[in-house]
Image (tube, rainbow, N blue to C red; front, side):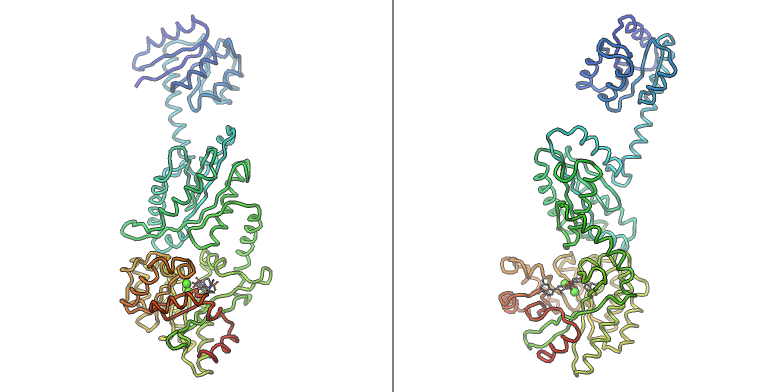
Amino acid sequence: MAIKLLLVEDNSGDIELIKYYIEEIEGLDIELTYVKSLDDAVGCFKETSFDLIFTDLNLPDSSGENTVIKLLDNVNDVPIVVLTGMDSYELGMNLLKKGIHDFITKEDLNSRILFKTIYYVIEKNKMLKTIQTLAYKDSLTGLYNRAGFVKILNTRLDAILDNSIALIYFDLDSFKIINDVFGHTFGDIVISEFAKKVQEILNDEHVFARMDGDEFVILIQSMTANKEAEGIVAQLFSTFCEPITIHEQLIKISLSVGVSLYPQHADNAEDLIKFADIAMYKAKEKKGYSQEFFSNEMINGLEYRFMLNTEIHHALENDEFSLVYQPIIDTRTNRIYSVEALLRWNNKKYGHISPVVFIPLTEFSHEIVPIGIWVLSEACNTIKLLNDSYNQSIALSVNVSPIQIQEDDFIESVIQVIKNSQMDMTKLTLEITENISFTNDSLTIDKLTILRNNGILIAVDDFGTGYASFNRLNSNLLSEIKIDKSFIQSDMLYKSSLVTDIIRMGQNLELDVVAEGIETKQQLEYLIANDCHLIQGYLFSKPLSFEDLKIFITNYG
Ligand code: C2E
Ligand code: CA
Ligand code: CA
């Protein structure tokens, strides 16, 4: 392929000379274009691309350093060689620092020097580009990395006229768990497959980058970036609402998305990125597939989160945790079927904090492991005491995080705790959220099977939100499914057959089906009419302290 060389030179004699030298060079195929002014050179660039520019400093419409500065601004990454009558070391150094590739005095020019210069500059430029690629691209996905993205965003902001920009910032909600369960190699595959799928939604105008680990960002620039962002987010959610298969594993990828806007929220790259990130964290507080546009109030929220993270390290030792118990009623007998233990955190500085906020923090730091054991122990002791003193046999459900199951001594510690409490194992159900712990991860299944063989029951919590597709449910292992409250509390309950399908399937597999989050009589009647009799929700009772639970069982026990 011919090397396209642009010569910017107003002296006809010099042009002829260079043409002559070029003809003399053997082994390099050069296609020479020449223009006689800076304006023409810039104009030329709008139409053709060149591999290399040779320019004089003094032209009819520009002189000295300005020629170089103007060219650098207009020719992107094309290497520039200055060819001048002035023989000045200082000038040469100065221009090299500005970004030109070489500086030759016309007096020294001959075909050998010309050959070497062209050859070296083009090679050096290729190397520079490789280095830039390494610095600006992510090696796993081939997307821009943070540095590359910041560079592009800055360039866009510098040149922006009346357009607006939206940044969509998002990450994978349970990526940490995917990494912990399946290992980092598999985690990498998930990231790159995920990136490919996102890319399919986007067009050439969008800039897509991997910022860090499982965090990504999309840049949209248009008159209606705001609206366009909403459309892209909707497409992201609909793409990933179904689980995807990666290496024969079904992986459900749930996203949290934050959006920031130029010029509404900030006018510089650093703040736009930071604000989109903050909005994403806010979205994370809602469970899965949520989006938030940035707002100023969120900044306080982020500081709050950060402070919570410090506070929670000491929560266990400072005795700040307690348990409440929510009854599950069997409507056929109108008696308590069991109680679910739910963790509460009352911090001396921040007061009551919702488990939806703090459980993910403890999962991230793995502090959920000792906390989970504390929950199990406290709950078993309490319910054993209750049953003994009231002559009852109320069953207990305890939530278990997938992070706990990953621990090597998970089984031993669970069995030890139950033995210590002298609680009847067959009266204990462990609730495990329907997520990756129900894929074909054999280690998890093996561990749960051992517990099951010891008499402990296993329930799938939040059923319907994850991807334990119906036919994957292992009815030897499981004894119960809990229909997620989001299905109960939306209109879908009556309009879609999803809930009745789950009930039917549970019955076929001889599993108990518990419906969660029942707040109204209408919901209750619908469920009973469809043969679901195990009911948990505010309609019967909110989660109760031990004292209140004792009162409750005197009515329902
Ligand atoms: P979950 O396991 O799905 O627990 C049910 C949640 O629904 C509880 O929220 C409960 O208070 C709430 N709920 C029950 N009935 C109703 C209702 O009628 N209406 C409404 N709006 N809500 C109702 P809570 O206590 O805030 O817990 C939230 C989540 O935190 C739990 O969801 C569970 O995933 C997690 N969690 C709580 N305690 C523990 C624990 O000890 N260990 C682990 N790993 N997770 C826990
Ligand atoms: Ca639960
Ligand atoms: Ca649940």
